[in-house]
Length: 194
Image 1 (cartoon, rainbow, N blue to C red):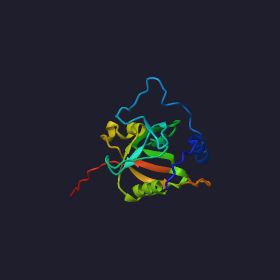
Image 2: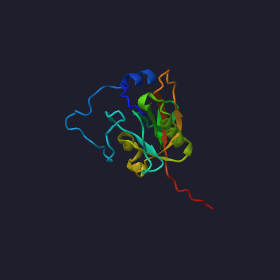
Image 3: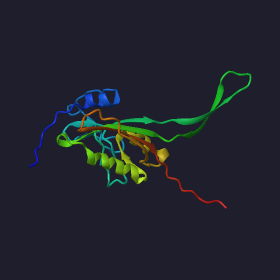
């Protein structure tokens, strides 16, 4: 006989314990005149497994029809460029020359919370399955869309999973922290020149 038990989980406290920072608390559900979608149509909020509305949902998968909703995510982006500095003789300073836009590095951190005080083995396995596929993944998130769907990238929202980390869970069987390190994926048509 299955017993359904409600579990009180303080996601902010768990996030602080695992990642060393506490996310800001705000009431998304009662915000007046709330925008519901980003510029590219991606939702700005979603409802988690515990029935709570949260900000900035993230979905990832091998195609638009096979997207997995990531649990309790936070997103950070590193968008850097490579410049070459040339120092001038008998003058102060240098001349910087823009070379190219580096890959966009996206870090998604979150917490996988198991149902009914159970270890979230299936969810962990699903993340690992995405990583081992070794193919570009579609990433849907309003924040990453700004960088990935930019016209300079021809609307390409695919990323490569470079790293999946599962930090120590510190003795809590029902919670597993995770971190995905992703980088933008460019589509190139290479032509052989003879």
